[in-house]
Length: 292
Length: 292
Image 1 (tube, rainbow over the protein chains, first blue to last red):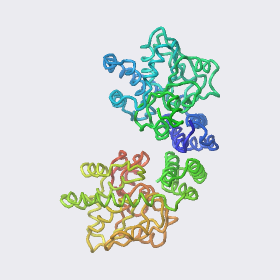
Image 2: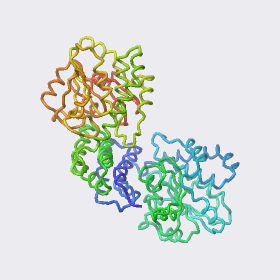
Image 3: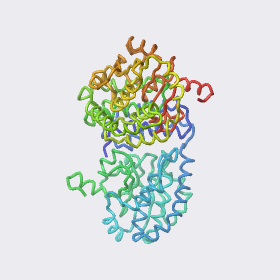
Image 4: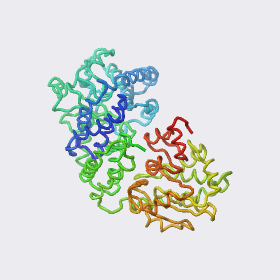
């Protein structure tokens, strides 16, 4: 998707939070955000927000006092999600539609975000989403496709929620070939290839996008990933950055996320705070005047 | 006060909101925030946040489709506050300490902010503040000084809350010479000199700071204002920008505001969302290690 003016200060704010998490001093943080601006100042609205933020964050890396500022927080978020999953398993298992409930839990996990002060409410979000369902919901067509599918690719987003993603994938039929794609290297709180190997992934195959860019930046991903993306019978992509880079993909992609800002709220026609499970085909029909 | 790295993207966000209120298109908004950045990019942390934002907003003015984008909103906020004052007058009048209650109402009005979507909760804030009081409270020393004072200057902030400010001033002894200072020209939702003449100001004297800058930028204010500022027996300054520019003033200033961001929260040692009524002398003692 195209960016909005909002995405430019937002990219600086992401650099800023990252530098705070990294424990940098104010002078260094200001230098980093000024330098990041230099890297993005010639971009226009045609760039996706995830790309603008990726370029800003990459420029800031030379100011990081450590290689991966989010390492410790990611590990905390993984534990938090694992504990939560234990607690809510009974709700999930007794649900009239456990598959849909697992998708709602996956989307809710997307609220575990850049919480320096743990200022997110995972349990509240989860309960609310289970009650209210998806604000935009292509679960029907998804379930139909799943019946005939031989392979499914899930493009993951952040640490923490990866626990729910793997729970969902492992709950699917063992006849379905299942892949989970994560980042090649660290960026923000996204899960990386080396981190996910620490999980019990069952017979889910772990792959890398081949890039450490936010979302899926096609100019940067590996050929293996691109082939898998094109050939999987079903693709689900999680979170904001994947939404921002895949909403106009040529193939069908099911976009699963918590809507967290006005820019994505406008594009999905969904209030901030709600969860959506939305095929990019529905979005394209919306653009054509036929709202899904 | 010194700025923080946070104040730089925040200044861009203020320009952005202003341009949205003005109804500018995305391309124009992006041009305005890029140009605003050019105006502030060489500033360091020694500049007050209000000064950084003032310079950013001034640079953006050439992109405004109208002279004062907030004119209509300011008028709405004034009506909103006048209605609210009618409703709460009985609570104020029956309070065991009406003077303190009026100060709390004045501080609460400071929540009527850049609410494009009226996304502030004036009544909730007011009730909460009346219940919880000031998170930092120099009301005691203020009341003692008021007994002996012959003149008081209130440096106002935004439209809307000005209604509560005037109510407070008019409730003080007629023997006290009372002044209210507002901006010379429009900036954000700050009250201007021409606007305040539309109010029943009783025997309160209306003056201008002589500048359209946020807060009190001493390099810019008029000599008349500076004299008044130096000579008034008591000075109260409202809101964030006045706090940011007057917290280190040589004379005593009572700072009255809702804490709305982490930067001011750190400086006042008060959580975001609480109200404070704080002498800059207490702040100076805090710096010296003797927390007030």
